Image 1: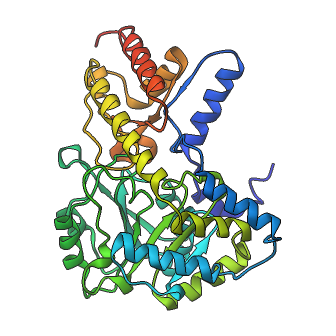
Image 2: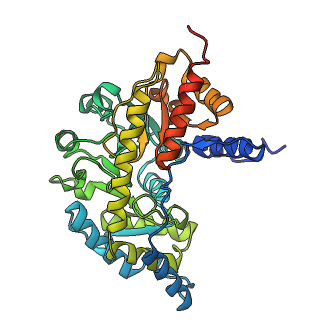
Image 3: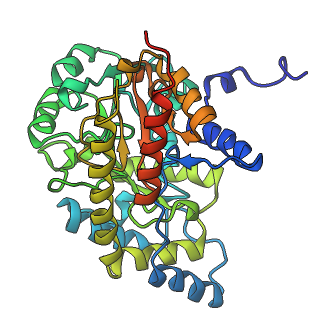
Length: 393
């Protein structure tokens, strides 16, 4: 009915398969079927009580008004202190832009920097929003295939081969969604050397930077000459279990921050006042809940990876960060999309087809282990039983 009315650029936007699979799983549950959820990338821990209490207190104080569009000064100062503490990057409050979630920083960055026909290099498999927004802005998506043999780390050799006179932005994501891969200091140093002196910006998606199992991941912004060319994306959803609060931020050169704030003013006016107050408490308050969560994710990671590797036709690398397992399922004989559908319908196990994260994800599934150990064990049992029903090929 509206096909000739809707703006053509809307055809460039895609959805997120995680929410589509969640809807399908919820439909099955409404019909009485028990489903084990591995599809949604959301910590299953509650927001820490001291953060919730800070929001309640702010509400009682009437912090429900408009506020600084770039973000509360107190929150931007807290973010600057946090960035120095955890990333080793001196940051001024005017280099910080607070947004209603981290995802808008992807949108704002690409809209601020990328002109039509300019190229954006990004990881494949990678977060689907990258390609979606690149196309929406009129940019040219340039995927770099991440390979299992490299533990899904971005290949600097491939990156160099993709850089052209039209390259405007490179997107890095470490630790990675969907693979859990982490770039090493050596990788980042080589990338820094490859782009230093070029008119290229980097969007460094560090939303999982506190959920790492082997050391602390380094930001490319710490390398000489890279800070002013890097937009760091971070937020509260994963680290502080605040997905529904919608609170994120970007760190960038002040000039870009001013332009990004103009985009925010025209789209959201500002980020919710009392939620920003809660964000201050998250950053400045006790960090015990973060450490406890990562410890539990480590246990879950080890269980699910060992369990997946014990199943016929499945092999799985051990992720170094985030909370996703990304097993190779080609040995089952079914295409990954068909297998994901089969597991949901036949076994009540909801996982995502790796192809939803890019062509290089074909042949893999993504399992979020942000669920209890009991659910992980039950899910593995169901997977084992379902795989026995597959016809031999």
